[in-house]
Amino acid sequence: MKKPISKSASKDVTKTTQKAEKLHPILQGAKILEPYKNIIKPYGIENF
Amino acid sequence: MKTSRVKLICDTGVISRAYSNFENFKSIIEDLSIKYEICITTTIKIELYRWIYDYKSKVGLKTFNAILKSINSLPVIKLDRKVCDVAEKLTIKHHQSGVGDLLTAAVSIDKKVKLFTINYKDFKTIPRINLYLPPHFQ
Image (cartoon, rainbow over all chains, first blue to last red):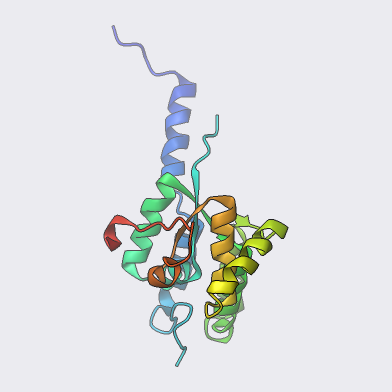
């Protein structure tokens, strides 16, 4: 008979899923700058 | 238990491209962040600050501060005396390289951390440097 998943185990799964969904800070920054993507040029490329 | 990932330095050009929403660089960062701890050096941090400061008036204070917070959250490998010694030696043969590039190369060499840069050609002539070239770039 299958053992029911313990409460703590199911919490662990939720934690892992949340961790996986959390964006890397650079990607979070990209998301914030998305509305400006037509005006922002990468470092080293002249801003004209 | 927290598992420690291998450190990888991403150069200013790489990170600013991801911030600038270049799709290929965003997906590279996404892939790398699974396997590596993406780090910057002090010089890369300064360059990123200078880069985003140029857009402060265009993006507004709130967005500007949010990006500074994002940059500040990246782990920094500091310049120390040994790194400066390596940089000084490098400059003898590579005096045409930029200050930031030389210091970042010195960090990579001294701390034995791989470096991912878009200036692959400029860096590959530097001895003992361990460059990272993602599969997309090969």
